[in-house]
Image (spheres, rainbow, N blue to C red):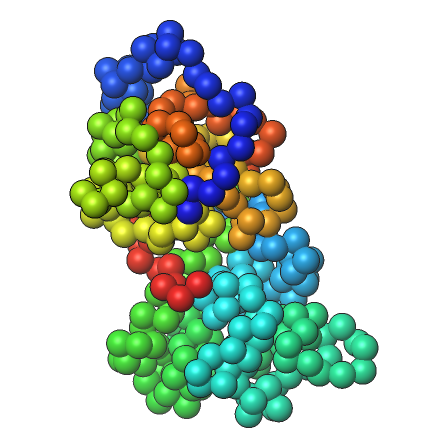
Length: 339
């Protein structure tokens, strides 16, 4: 939510605000789509690295190491599973008795839990054991279905959800809606944890999201604001970005650090209007993100900064700039609702 947007060279003078008026901003957006074919090449193949800060710093080396345990997985895919299962919460416990950062049920842990850190025990609550165990379990499943036609990673994920027997029986991802959805969700989320290896495609909905945010310029900030009539049409930072993308048919999570996972992450030099831009006091951990805005070009965003301020243009190049996300419809749909 829009908590504590601290003083960081915040105020943009009236002259800048005029220069970044609606006509100028929409001209930027139109320009983006005129040249989109030349700008975008999609994220290429190759070994996947984790996007900066996408995994909390305490777990990043473990995920990077164990995510390369076998060809069926990679660090970004392993990160996507952990995020989907627990939101990187090592104390998570579900109603179905699933435990820890990787949400092992006791029976599966008894069989597949390993001593990942070599300290002499297997502790489901210790990410140094649970993350390696998740990778090891994935690779075991992949080995069970290695002779099944189709994509090895998709077959592994289907085995994780439905069991290896079902994948072998149907010679691929079985025709179960839940299993097919699980495979789609994890492979889509994987893109939000992977550092791009090439240009990231422009968002088709960006212009509409910016147009919505522009109409809210000058609206007073409200912590927890969703723009409802009862709230006087006011927003906090993530309430504004959620509403802007909702206006073009994309449903984002409510809080900023979950919105970060709604698509791939373009570099600073690759930002396009409509990208969400994020800010944090901890540049190593996407879960610590505390502010978000909508990039409009020229180094500026539209954002709802803080209590006492109004929705306005602000610069993005500040010491707390964390990174950006190019929102995609599939990326937003893949996000878990319980994180």
